[in-house]
Image (cartoon, rainbow, N blue to C red; front, side, top):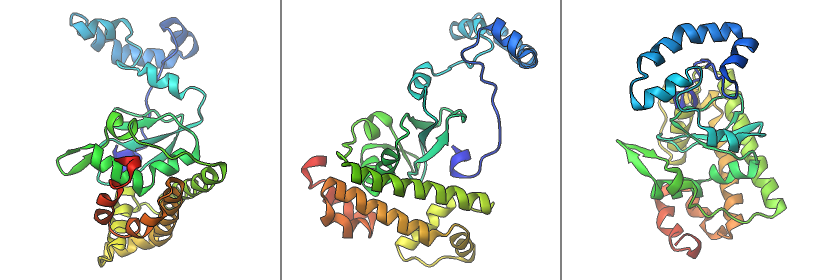
Length: 259
């Protein structure tokens, strides 16, 4: 989760999923030896437990390889991810080469319009209302926040507009993060939230505002929110949505589509 909300650590995992032990040794002997030395003995030592027996039998694989998730991701070049428990509900593209851990919610879609709708404040408010919390941080429950969410029926033109804005937002954040080590998503959206509420920024936040081009990001999000509202036929909520989040929450529930 911190790799997305803060900065990637640049860590790697050995993922031998899809290979049996003989194939692993023949195709990747150095990795085979590494796993034999580092993993096999530990797995064998726990083979007398219920879960340990299965882990020991497949000692070269992750204990929980998430086979169903892999089936859904097969053939995709990227997928959508969000941190399960986080202050700001941010969705972003991850390359298929990135192995998500258990603290991420993975959405097996590669269509930009899907990312756009999920990145809108309409969905953010839905997730806040439907999901839970951990301490003071909202928790995204996929069965309650995603599976129940009524996506709008998009025309080709709407899908193009929403998708293009989603791509711009994702690319903007990644570009500024790559250019400035101090730009993290959590920090950037803290600044964005204060900017939306017209709260004065301190010196550190002003620097982050400049490095992250937060005003540009805010404009892109506003354009995305307006496009998503139009797709629902809710143009009358645009004024509330672009103001305070709290002002919009009761209005959303007045609409039959979300009742």
